[in-house]
Image (tube, rainbow, N blue to C red):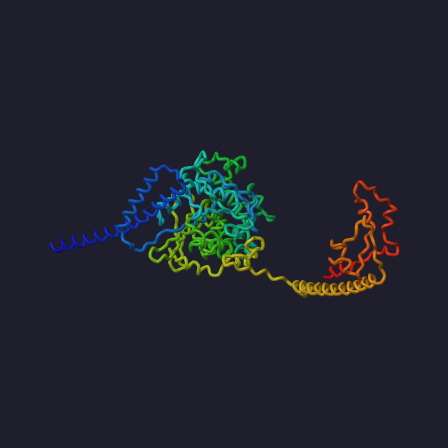
Amino acid sequence: MAQLQQSLSSSFIHQTRCSVLDYWLGMAQLQQRAKVAARSVTQSREMNPRRSPSHSSNLARSAGVAVLWSLTAPSVVAAQELLTQVHVITRHGSRYPLRKDASDLSESTPGTLTAFGEKQMYDLGQWIHETYAANSTDPAAFLQSFASFSMRLESSSLERTIVSANSLALGLFAGEARDPTLESLLPVVPANVPVYTHDMVNDIYMRAFDKCPELHDRLQALYLSDEWQQLETENDQFLAQLAETTYFQPYANQNGIVPLEQIWNVYDTIFVAKTECSEGHEDLATCQSISDGVDLARNVLTDEQWVKVMDLAHQAELMKYGPKTADKLIGINLIQEIVHRMMGGGIGLNDDNGNQEIEFSLFSAHYATILGVFSALDKTFFSQEVIPHYAAALIFEVTERSDTAQRFFKLTYKGDDRPNSRAVSIDLSNICGNSLICPVSSLQQFLGAWSVERWCNECANEGANQCLTGQDGSGKEVTPPAVVNDNDDDDEYPAEFGFILGLIVGAIGVVVTFFVQRRFYKKLLEEQKNQAQNNIPPAHYDDSQMQHNNDGVNGGVGGVPLEEAPNVPPSPLPAQLVSRATSAVSSDESPATNDEVVETRLPPATQKAVVDPVDVERELI
């Protein structure tokens, strides 16, 4: 009996503890839902003040009930790790075959997204919603509607990645996600979500692999390395067989083989055909377009040959984009941007954390982007199939402890485009010692002093705006590359020295010119004064003619009447002005004749132009 009582007592205590814990957790959820409901009421009233009263009343009643329940909950809840952010890097969906230059990774065909590729990305969007919406800090709101201030969908500036992002958004957000008030005037209600892109030349985040001359130099060195040459030599017979196939003859070299650096182009042609022409898709236009007129491209190689092509392609791409060659040159800029958002920053490294925190990010990119991020984290790709499949996703999950607000991250990889495929966790022990989850601060320390400035210098990029302006997250300027001195004589002094010397010489010239002209005008003034006092008789004019008025005061000089300036005779009136004055006589008088005009002129001896000394003094002043 005593044992039974002890057992019942232990069972009761255990149930009580579980009930208390459930109560606390339940109250915490109710508190969160109360906040969401209250916010919904406020947003509904602000966005649509004409909404029917019954709708607002229902929301208000729900909020009131939740708030009432929340008041009974404890003020302190056991610490939890709550999902606060999700940042996703994806490869685009299936596309048309793409031809790539092995030397600089440039592309010569558009590689347009196909209908099957759109469906792959749509399914991925649905999987993201189902996986993360219910597990977030706010399951009633996270990913339920699109919020432009806290969600950001970005893409490289290519058709296949932009359409992939749009397709993913359709699966991620419900039709009313963009229009929660149901006021759209469109005939259909899609998830009309904006996708942002960078100019191709400035995309050093999702396409850094073709913006880095240093990486291209490393690739050239790789193609000449013993490791690469050995792999090619071991498979030269098979590479010669590929060169005999019509599809792959454009990639053959003068030795009659498809060189190893071209194996990706062979792989891509067959991989697209096998993807697009899978069972049930043979009638798609994409599938029919990649046939040789007799058989589909997917059947050009035997199964054994196809396995061999895949094996060589995966080995070659791992050598090209792995840590040994790529290091941090491809993925570091994108990782730094994601870490910035993990720590609560807004869009772009240059914001001062005053922007709204980003809860969800999408970077619609390429398989080289994903491999570059792995290399930047010093991780060798763990899968036997190195080249990520279409619609593959690398996901940074960010959680926050409710008691300390410390943030952690987890890295998940979904390498298969099928919606029911499982995602796997990436080992992070090289970053923080824990295989599954690390503090975000540990990732910051692991990345060290890398910045956009350092990337520009190490990649020798001189074309992107970020490298031209020299701005990174810290606002520091990039140190310009050193100028090589070619030992020319004209390079002995810097340009600044010549500029300053020119200013000094110019200033001296201005001063000398000023004093020379001043001396000249003083001498001229003295000569004019002497001439006016000794040689020029005063001139008299008839009252019917216009008298000279130099300053508008009774014919005076410098505003002084003539009688008050006895030593300064008035200047003679020019003949042409006399003629004009004569012609201005009123119409009732007969015009003056030429003889009369001549009579009003000064005697020939006094016809020289006389400079008014006072006027000269004014000019000098």
